[in-house]
Structures are given as structure tokens and as C-alpha cells.
Length: 373
Image (tube, rainbow, N blue to C red; front, side, top):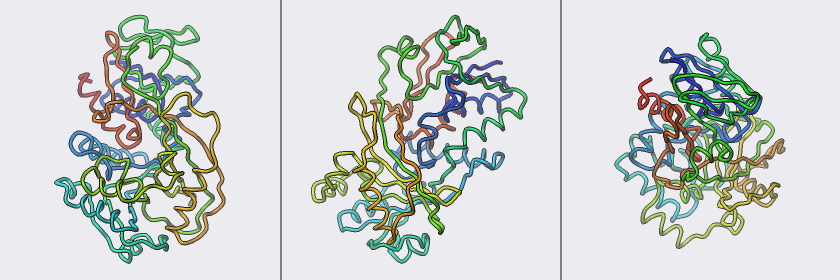
């Protein structure tokens, strides 16, 4: 069997991986020379901790298992089972963490509430002041800027994979066949469109009422910290954005403790991961209203830097990069991804939102199972 995968971000690449693993031939087509979108412009977090219970958590846990298995064969993914800590500083924030421990699925997430001293024993870089921290043992991380390249190299070694970069697919010409902007026809038994936040052109033609929106974020990366940040780190504002924390305790937090004006205006949370070179990837903001800004704003960077410094108890290293990214998110947030047959032999898989890096291996596995690969 021959599968045509359109899009070389992490969702598309994991679909290619699933097809090759099952013994099939794959042609992967990418409109850039290499993927340049949200799959590279993220934290590289395999983020189990905040996922909604049920299907979303099940998908994240399965993806976590798949990531670890793939990393055993592709060490250049930079996979590490580093877990995460979310320090809390007030009684209301502590209440949300305590409520999380009462969830039926708390053990599956690896939740544990640590004292401040226990948290610092796990992550000695956290020298700032806080009451305690929510630990999630199942969280992990990979290197987002290089993961797709490492996967592509491994796929190429199979002898059943062809990458075609710098080609934009313009037309579905028949079942299992597409034409690119060079006029070349690529034929297969299945076509899977994993086009990320590119929702115009062919995607709009095939799915004009697509229940997916685009979301913009701002992030940054520092020079090496000079010491190990042994876990991923979030702040308590993240409780406001992840469905695992919904409930009376979060309602009390929202009613009794406002975000700072900057964090509220830019819908901010702190997420932070250390890269293999020692630098810190830090963010992020959320912008939903179109048209998006074409520039990045300094105020959110100043806010998140101050939060990080307060947790580390030290100045940040020099900021080396700042960037914006755009990802596609299902408007029905209860759905992990939007998967739709748009023509005979052609499926569209998009809209995982901020779950794409976490869930992509399991999303691809589910597609492969549903299509009978």
C-alpha cells in the first residue's frame, strides 16, 4: 500500500511513521523545504498533566508511551521523562492543586503535591519563594526544533519513505491522488492531509465549514542557564487554561485572585522547558482574534521573564530568540483532533491545538487503525 502524507509537521510525520511501521510505502509532501510551523515553535512538551479526563487523557497517555518507544529507536529526538512541577504561592492556588489530587485519574497522571523543600529536592534550580508544587510524573519533553528531522532520517532509512519538500499540493485529482504546484501527480491508496494551521486554499475547498480556528502565541528562548532545570515548570496561571483543573477550587481562584493585567490581556501562562544545550524555552500567550498582529509585543515577554526570575530566584540568562507561532485548534475543545474524510480516499487531520506535540503519535495511530492500514 502507498500513503501520501501532506504536511511535514509532527502530526504529518507521525502519520508517515505509522504507515512505514505497518510496512507501507510513504510519500510525504511539504510546501516548505522543511517544516517551519507550530511543530518547531513549541515547548517540545509531552504534557499529560493538564489534559481533560477521558479520551483526551487516554490519548495523551498512549502518546507518551509511543514517544518513549520511538525515542528508544531515534535517540536524536532528545526524549527525557523529566516530569513537571507547578509551584503554587497562595492558598487559592494550593486549593486547585489539592483538588487535582482528588481526581479519579490522578494516579494515572502521576500527580503528587510536594512541599517547597521537596520540590527543590526534585528541581534545585527553583530557589524562589512558593508554598509547594504540583508534581506530574508522566510529563516529558523532546527537542521540537530537531525532532521532525530526526524522525525523517529514521523514516528514510526504512527504504519505504520519500520526502518531497518545496511543493504545495493544489488539487485532489482522483481517489488517493494529488497534484502539486509543479504539476506533478502523486498517486497512492490513501491521502492524509496534515496541513496544520494552513487552512486556506485546498483545505478550504475540501472542507469549507471546518470547525477549526487558528491561535497565535509568543515565546522566547534563552542562552544556557548554567545549571540543570531538571523538570518542566509551569506557574499557577496554567491552571486557568487546562481542563484537568476545572472545578470549584479553580472557580474560587478565578473569583478571588486576578491575573496581572498583562497576563489577563494576553491570556498568559508560564511554561518552561530546558533544551539540551542548557537554554530555556519560555512562554506563552494566546491570541484568538483575527487578523493576528504581524509583530511581537514586548510586554508579555517582560511579564513571563519576571515570573521565571521569581521562581528561579535569579536573573534570566540573555534572551537569544523571540518568535511567534500559529497553530490550529478544534472549536469543540472536547475533541482531541478533527479527522474528516473530505473526498474518496482523502482524509484531513487537523486542529489538535496545543495538544499536537503531546498527542501526535496516538492521533496518527488512531488514524491508521480507523483506515485499516
